[in-house]
Amino acid sequence: MAVQIPTAIAINLLAGAERRGVDPVALLSRAGLGNTPRDLTVPEFVKLVRTVTLTLDDELAGLHHRPQRIGWTAIMASYVSQAATLGEGYERAVQFMDLGDNSFRYSLRSSGSNVMFEMTRIPGRVVQNEVAIEMILMLVNRMMAWLAGNLGTINRAWFDYPAPPHAYKYRSMFLRAPLLFDQTNSGLALPATLMKLPLIRTEEQAIAYARRTPLDAFLPMDSTSGLSLEVSVIVDSVLSSEGRLVDMDEVGRALAMPSHTLRRRLKKEGVDYSDIRKQVRRDLAVRLLATSDVSVEEIANQTGFSEASAFIRAFRSWTGMTPRAYRSSDAVR
Image (cartoon, rainbow, N blue to C red; front, side, top):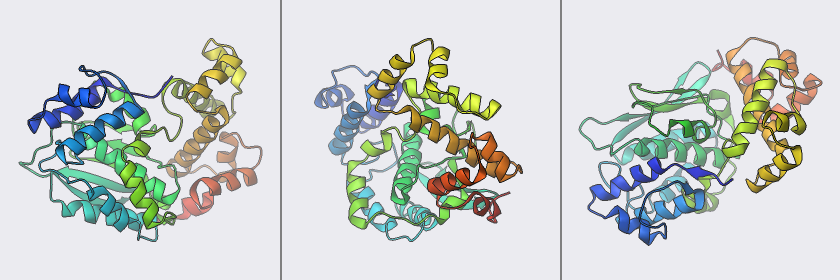
């Protein structure tokens, strides 16, 4: 099953073009997507985004107060790539995005074990709909994670609007982070210790990434969509409650399908079962380190490692530091 972008997101994206006087049906047709909004695969959605943005010469698709001309994101990627660390990169991103003086003010602040990336509406400025916020949060988080060679862990995501009809998709869009709606602004809580990670991409690579936007941002990063999402929920549930990793046969029984069918369907989504288990382990370990006082040895046990040393090696490969270094940071509660 291919990853699907809900119809509501396509409709909201096209609303920006309509605001600028461009016929949404004509844009759908130009993108080769018929004449009626529908659920889209990632490649189809990318076609639609590129058709809208190129037609309007606006990387923000008409959703913000003023156009953001084509090339702006590539310039930002070039600027951000000069940072030494992920934290410095986020600081540069905030500075650069504020230069646009468009619909939002952007900020970065420390709060306990998190660094908070926030976007607050400027009074009187146009924000067409929630896609104007969803796209910014996703694109910035994914770009920054890619620059650091990281998976973009999010500890919490919040939004200054009520939960939209497609909120069920937010679990995959925002990497299984806890979600809050009807807040005073919108933003992401990012693990503070990850801010120490070095940026590993060159300026040329960063510019090339920006020019592929939004393709890379909407490709699955952690197997949290379709059947992969169902599998990850089962693995997470058993690991969290019993401290063990389920095998594919057990997951297949829970989903009422033979393991060979499960393996074949996951392969069609471009996902390997072992990768799902690794991702679930990592997310649980980060949560436990950031929100509890249990020992590293106990966390190793709770995340299904036979010994603490194996867990420490795995955690270092995920985050670039040991579990104790993560916890001893002055940003951790």
